[in-house]
Image (cartoon, rainbow, N blue to C red; front, top):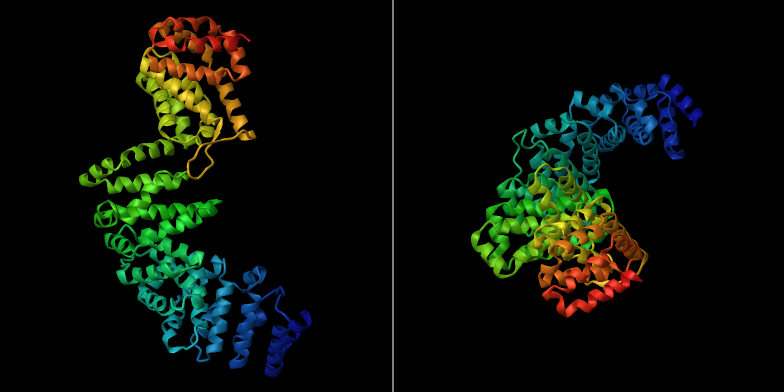
Length: 551
């Protein structure tokens, strides 16, 4: 290949046009995967006023620019400006090759974009404007691809394009090419990417995102089976959804319903940061649409609206983002008093409580903050209420799944164990009940998507119950039981006694806890409960627990 380059250079210097043409054809035929050392010969070739040479030269540049090392050498003001001039050539093949060359040179190349910005993109936009004069879409597609590269790397170029009234042109092209969808996916991807980049500057440049433009993007979104196109449409909607007229149009056109269907269809494929980000954006768009009063009334539809009913199902989701969306969406529907009354009658308020509890207890950072407040706050009221809140979350989340998170947070279990020593009977009972649920939950599975709780005895369960027992021992549960039974054992109410008994039955299954109870003389104080009138029917059970501890 080096011999060919030498031959081309010599032919160029001597202006042997036929030799130049023949050599360029050989270079293209033999493959273009070569690294060039300089661009001098190309600069000279672009100056030759012969159409066939220009056509072949631009094709060679386009091919050579596929290599990153070559792009650096071709990032030259003289070459780029010469290619921009050629966009006004009368030969469509020359224009096509010049666009290809510019597109490849500018790929992930900020320096090349800067050079184009100096000259301007008027000639590039002019090619798009002449789309209606062409029967073939290939030149439009290559031009759109070039603009995608330019707009993604340079802030000034989108601003320049907006001043050139490119948005109405984009709308025309989207309308023209979205049917048939399958044949035009690549071009639509480029056009929507351009629109997405430009939309970031609409407000700054006072460019309206019209309902007509929004409508064609909605139409594309509805028929799209292409993930990249769907996500780009979603980004456009999300960026413009603060405008009331756009919210209303999205609601009328069933975008919320479609988003729900897509999320439900693909939610189990969300397994990385990028896909999670898309899911969050889709969820956020639903909530934003519902902030519009007209949208909220329309989608509630007297409590039978499809979106409203869909959001209710997410109140029981095990996905924290869908759960949060459900809570926020129902909160938006509840802005009207009559809706609130209807929700309470239908039991939605209870689901909201469960959902909120599940959402909060699933957040490790929130649990960590609660524990911090429990042991570092100067406010006694805060320190006293933290364990109560933890117990409330355990009770109302109606799921065992978050318990593993709770066990992972240092001193979380300790907060609840220490509430046993409270001087308030209601707090003692709350502690016993919460610890009971933890014991049961750590011995069971909540893996079923339907929420059915099925017993299992696998490694995960064994580790969780083992860890829980270790946590209660480290929290010195024996000392706390000694205190509360010594002081209040003879006057505990029946419910508290029942919860204490159930907890002890769970705890004595662990050898580590039995050893701990022996070292803290728990068995010696259990007798005080036997004399409580509320424990007469279950005194034998307490005796069996004492026997279990002793053995």
